Image (cartoon, rainbow, N blue to C red; front, side, top):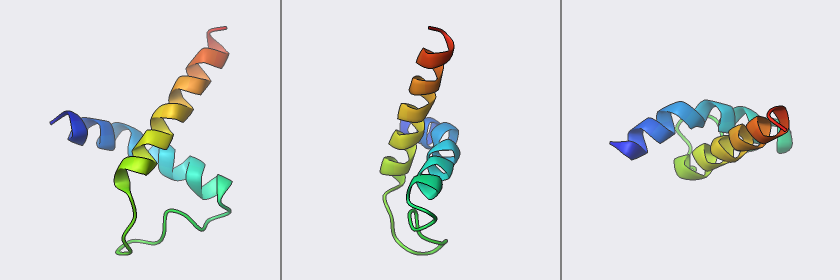
Length: 56
């Protein structure tokens, strides 16, 4: 349940960050295998970083 919530909340921000950082190469287009957890973890890290910078 927690995994589903975390993936749902942080997958999109992670996807956007990774697409920018890798110049559109990762994550691959739909249907190709990739790590959903890595994308969500990137989204969590990005969100925490933004919060720390804004609340500083």
